[in-house]
Amino acid sequence: MIFSVYLLKYWELLFRNYRGILSSNLVVDKVPRKKTFSRILVAIHESSKSEEKAIEYATRIAKDYDAVLVVLYVVRAHAKLGTVTPSHVIDLKKQAQAHITKILEKIQKHDEKDITVKIKTEIIASIKIAGAIVDYARDKRIDLILVGPRGRSKLKSFVLGSVTSDVVRLANCPVLTVR
Image 1 (cartoon, rainbow, N blue to C red):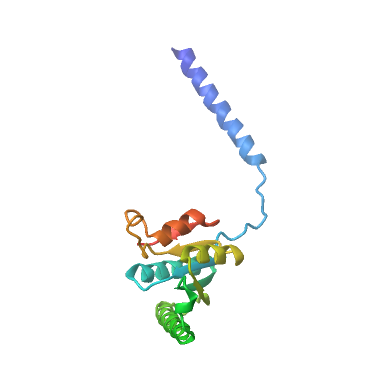
Image 2 (image 1 turned 135 degrees about the vertical axis):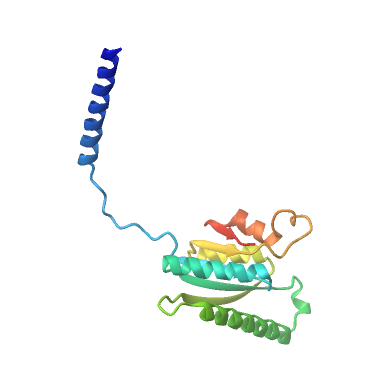
């Protein structure tokens, strides 16, 4: 019994010394790491409460990572282009610009004085909203996409909206859905 206690103490002492040798010889790599998120996309395709939360989250993340926040408004284009008149397109663009202006005002109102967020806005039109969001993110090398769970079809509305589920499925970067 006494022998086993001494043996145990010997092994503890040996292990402590061994661990100390390992830790003293470690060389820490001091290569600067790439920031996790440098470009954050918040995709908007209709007005909702989840959109406001997504913008709020995106703003906070952009502040934390000193990232560029891209506000992308996607206008749903009609499949039959013959039914769309130029005045209708101009009205849709004006509505989108007014909506983005409201969003920017909200961001600036909540913005702290010492921390500013770099913001870029884009308006695009597409028949397939999810495809447009994913293509934009791929082309502009977006690091994170934030979307709300709206734009639901009846079949996919059990879990997420159809646009949101398609973005999650097709995107080549992380996607954060905000409820």
